[in-house]
Each structure stands twice: as C-alpha cells, then as structure tokens.
Image (cartoon, rainbow, N blue to C red):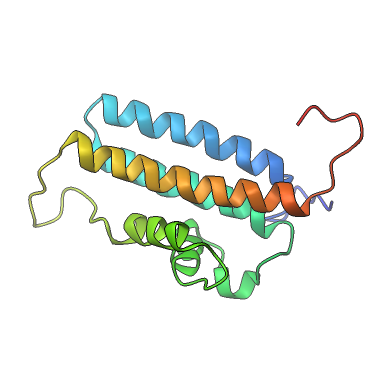
Length: 143
C-alpha cells in the first residue's frame, strides 16, 4: 500500500480514510442534533467522499472518472454501473438534496434527516466493503 503525505489521495491508507469518514459522520449527526441541516448535509457528503477516497486509494476504480473532489466522487458513484443499485441511489440522494438556505424553503423532518444519514452510511459501507475486499490485511491486524 502506497502512502504519500504530499499526495491528496495517498496521504492516508484506505482504512484511515474510512476512519476519517466515520468521524465526519459523527459530526454530521452532531450538526443535525444542533438543527444545522446545512452543516449536516455538507458533512454527510464529506463523510461519503472520504470513504470513497479509501476505495480510490486502492486503485479499484478509475480516478480520472471519480475526480478529486468529494462531490465528484459521489456523482461518479451515483453513475457507476458496477456499484449496487442501493449505493447508486444513496449517492444520488446526497448529490440531489438541495443545500438549505437556497431560494426554496425546505421543511426539515426527522425522516429526511435520517435518509441523508442513511445515504451517507450506504456509500460508506460500500467503500469499506471494497477496502476489505481489495486491501491485504496484515496477519497481526485486529481489523
């Protein structure tokens, strides 16, 4: 596994990207608890994108298709025919959910908040499964 602290993608191992994504998802939950839906959506997207970085760091998907930004990653995953349908739909939900504060007033409900969190979790679970499938595990690893 290549690690390069100067490279945007290889500065972390795939599992470190997954751990960073899990931390980001906790921040999203905190933002929802604080009723800051704009921050929650941004951190859900960031969490999903970080997890996808873990998958991309393994070179199992074409980086030129997935781009460098977290949103590019999520858009690409929403169109990736090799990804499960539920993962593509979850990525699409994260992409298409409008950012609060635009010209349209959105009603916030627990159901829409849960859908946003669940979508991020689906994308993250897919990325983690890809990491587990493609990354060799050291014999003394606890993961």
